[in-house]
Image (cartoon, rainbow, N blue to C red; front, side, top):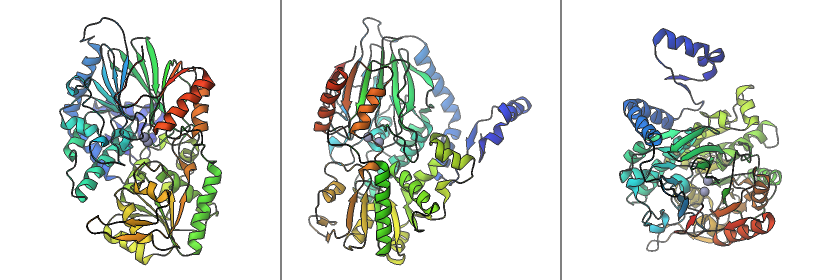
Length: 535
Ligand SMILES: [Zn+2]
Ligand SMILES: [Zn+2]
């Protein structure tokens, strides 16, 4: 394995160096990019894969045999069935179970961060699901509502493949390890251990966008850019040798963002579309992005004038890096005075992973990095904050600044810690840039709650929310209502049936009825535990 800052140099013109190394040493070199910001997680993932390369060879061979040795079940009628084990009329714990006469595949396996208790997890107790029969798991992107439960499958003996893009593998491992850490900090028993996460990494098969791959004898899969976060994919399934084609979008953005190209709309074939509905309601039209960027600039500039601090709670991946690149751009072009930006541990680590996969970013950012040697992530205005002590210094010893910290919905994590320290000062600002789940502290503050208990019921610690609160929905990595409708209009070919998921009850239903009227296609919005016969 050759790690290089500029992989092109190690590959040589049209692979000349690779060939030379091969002929002279009889070894096959694998080229990997050294991330511009050092990432311990990537080092660890690469080390796990390297240490277990013998096991990996046997594992991949076994997977290959399962796919190409022919059917193991009786070949009778052809049918396709999808069961909703999570993510039906809700945002959180996305998990679809796809069955054909031959195949058993999970599409996503997430947790619901906004709640606790058993309804935080996918309903694997559904009678049709048996972990011992599972052929493959496909993960669309690293957000925990899509990937957070995967190590649990390994805890209970699953040893089959997990398909995703390389950035998804790295970021989800990081977020899962963080989930374990947060549970421990809160004195709870984590649902799985770091060893289960490692087991998952050992069984991950990374695919690139547009790469066609058989995953079972009768399911052929292609991942397409979803425009949502780094490495996020829409899953296209070609089932039963031409019997049916479906697309599971999972979370997707049909618009260009600071970081990513918009979701793909051209497919070789498409009959059934499974579409997200996070902002599917009639009135969920997202404000124009330019306007929202200007508003963020104003909030930061005004807060700087008042010598206050701006807290932006973020999911580690997605909005955080959008905001990072945007602020860098505003400072570089003089739209905003130079302001220190403190990026808390998890967000920083995920930003580092972005620097290992610049080929997944949009044209503009790629050009900055490759041709101008101007990597926005490396700007000196950014500093990493890692420890409790450093957090204290940011709050007490620095003046005006911007702070990005997880969790995005203010449920656990350092963002809550910052909020507790900053909330009573009217000179400070709180800016929401991502979706606030039902029941989360973020949603309560958005609704206007003015006093928050940061302690417990027995030992209350009440603080007033005096800081200025702003919600900027335009930064969303999800498509707004209009973008969702446009995506369907632009889909080539036009789907014959649309299934809505990943949205609150009313939003799924609203989008289902609007698409039915506008496109004259069959639409449905299943609830959890509903099963649909697709063919
Ligand atoms: Zn997501
Ligand atoms: Zn999601």
